[in-house]
Length: 185
Ligand code: ADP
Ligand code: 5GP
Image 1 (tube, helix red, strand yellow):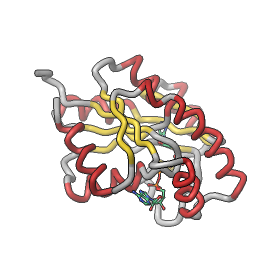
Image 2 (cartoon, helix red, strand yellow):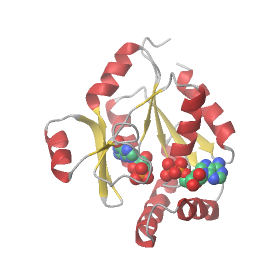
Image 3 (cartoon, rainbow, N blue to C red):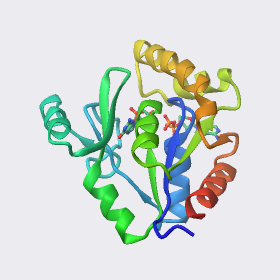
Image 4 (cartoon, rainbow, N blue to C red):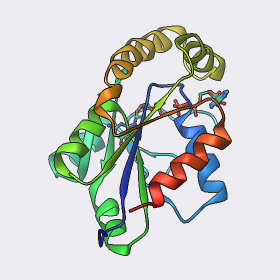
């Protein structure tokens, strides 16, 4: 038995349903701690600073990176995203299970720096359904959707790098499966 709580990374193409699954899981099981990332992306309607992301300027992101304050970071579809290091390390000490919802490049960095992390890939039931979800969300203009779908092709090809794949057909089922993975050490 490990003495440390498990660090679980959830990745998968944009629009597959990562945020939806995580929100569902945390509503039922608030004890699972989710890292709040910093991003240079602008907030979507309803997104709150400090809850969904820390929304930062390019200059602020430059400083976070230069000061080594991010555990990992990546550029995704024209914006930068990163995981604040201190909060993750504090939670690892506290003993609560923790979850990072980050892109493929970030997952690879965590794999390098934290060997015992569990990497979970959330896959769509089909390519057509992924396009439908990303488009149907209605939060990005067509050119950003195209960029995200280009990234999705690369991410789907990297699925074998992950420890576990969950297919997001039913939000309830996947949330339950994810919880079981997060809690098992
Ligand atoms: P991500 O965080 O991976 O970018 P979202 O959680 O924003 O994706 O989900 C993208 C869209 O797909 C949202 O409109 C969401 O309501 C929808 N969605 C998520 N999971 C499912 C599912 N299992 N079945 C149908 N629609 C889903
Ligand atoms: P979105 O703009 O849709 O919220 O997120 C776009 C992508 O960035 C998603 O794949 C999401 O998982 C990823 N992402 C969010 N936060 C981070 C982070 O801190 N680091 C990395 N590497 N990716 C992140």
